[in-house]
Image 1: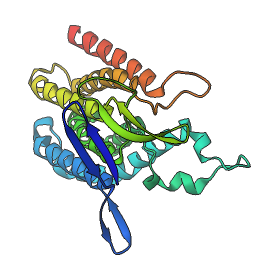
Image 2: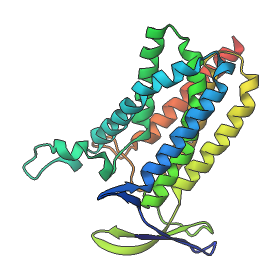
Image 3: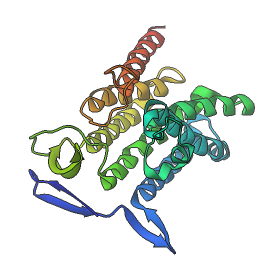
Length: 269
């Protein structure tokens, strides 16, 4: 049980990570929220599939491969940049801890990268237009990310540094081994609202696109810009080994610049 307050707004929540038990097996709110986001994303993509020239059956078939492999990708990405967390005292790697994803440790960019790779292979095998499928898929991606961030709220994680803003979030967390009360940026909320805004813009922009694949690049531009500034507020950044650079900020900047360049070039062409 954890307590989260928004003192500037007069709100307080008492949160339990476990929603219910099936026998002795706990079912966590985080998993339920992620599943809800996934379900809504699939429902939207199936609803909009015809508009992009994609068959609903192809969406379902692709998900059988994309979902488990994207989870693997998100986990591998996290482990790669937090490898020391999985070392034993003798320096050897604890492969059991690496597998225990229920203990936390997934990086969304790893999942996105793996999803793109899976979609490329799937479209190649099925002889489907990759860019048309990707244009549809990024809408589902945004829906899932927008809702999934609320799993971070229940887990009281993915928050930012100290702030005195009216919407600051009050939490109890360990700092240097001591449990303290902190008032921090609710970065999970920032990203959820940003994704909602990007989604609304993309729904408007969809009817005005000029080339196949444009929605994919608009997603990279919009999400990249948001993640670039939000990641700078967070206290749990994944760093490039031996540097002060946040991996997600660097990747976000590269994607946003590349996406803007492609959109401008293709529209002029």
